[in-house]
Image (cartoon, rainbow, N blue to C red):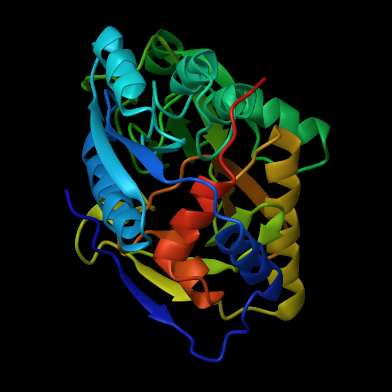
Length: 332
């Protein structure tokens, strides 16, 4: 599926000078030549990853790197041999979801001693495991929705909390498997539905209001985007189907709220120990900002939210990919 959400961008938005300086420094001190791009993978987000990876390959080639794309499968010995044969100076991890964004691939690259883009093993694992991330955020003073982990059977017997509430897989991204159970829904959730995401689920109270997202680059917030959709919520189709959503960038909100959204995203990035780029998804109910989740490997398609915010900050996509490659690390 090709990501094709429409966006509206204000030409009057200020450039992010701090982020631009980071990119300029990375370009001035380039030390890497060969890059392997990991894409595809095994998760429910495979199609999005293929799109992100293809876009990254094109951008990196445009930036002057020798690039080799690897479509990742369950054949890990072949993946290891391919990486060893290529001998990349860095790995651009364009995988999304399980086995690519949850620490599994990061662990393999750590063992191989290959620097890779985005967050390390621990931050990746924490961010993908929603219950763990929620506990950590709450412990550090970040506001999250009321929630708990329950079994499928418990939901089929009785509502685990007052409606409306949100049902989420414990460790999927891109809103895969997410549903809202509303007052008007007659049947119990799962009563007549397939659920391939495990026996336990996360349920959270539904937060009404406006949806914002903030990209964080090395501790600097790039901007605030408001997301609008005519769908029930910002689900998988709203994110990636043509016309599924509209991005208003920068968000047309009070400056104090704009700054507060950026502050929450930066704190969430730091709380998880993220590096490279992350993206925080937020809800504002008119009074408080709620942190929904942090994406440690946000989409890199042509209409994804992070490239949009980087572009607004004065960072073209090839420069953004260059910065990710030149700052790539592996855990020691």
